[in-house]
Amino acid sequence: MGPTALTSFDPVRLGRSECDAWVGYYLRDWRLVLRSVVGMVRSGFGLSRAVSLRGAWYVLRANQAWAPYPENDPGTAVSFMERFYALVVRTHGLSFDARRAALLEVDWWREHRFVQRGSEIGAADPAAPDDAALVASLARLYAYVYGLPDERVRPAARLRAEAMHVSDGWVARGRNTDDPGLRRQRRLLVASYTALRQVVEQPAARR
Image 1 (cartoon, rainbow, N blue to C red):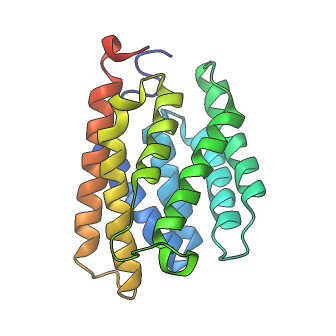
Image 2 (image 1 turned 120 degrees about the vertical axis):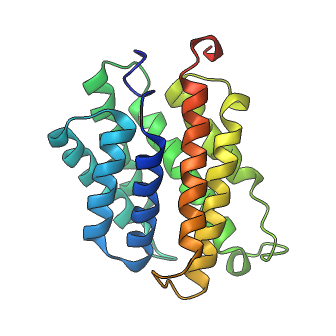
């Protein structure tokens, strides 16, 4: 991929937008999710305003398909994420497979849900969730999309998984938008994307 197609994103804007998107998701405020995802898509994938809106719509529909518990629709979620990644591939002339990227994306959603709802699914100690599989699934997605070895992107994946744990705590405490935990969640997401950008900007790190 070109050096600016996916590697020159703004970690601060991206992290803040994702934090807002998570808040909207758990409040089922789909307008907030859409607005936030537009920012994520535009800053994270280097898309124009019009293309970002279309891509954000696909991501929104994927999240709406995934959101219900326990009866969600993973197949529809994958289908919409495949459309999203196909849009990214076409826009930037990339060579990765949109279907595989979509499957990797929804795989970390699945791993996060297992961690988040461990007490209901049967985790041994839901108070201390084992997020190794979640970190690994995030790293696989980053490695595939950016063409990097897994170990190079694991620090960013760990920070994003930690942000998810903070988000889960916020949800458990009642989803109060004044909760100071949201500030920590935002900082972790910014740190995660800062770590990711540092890696993807280094041509020597690529396979």
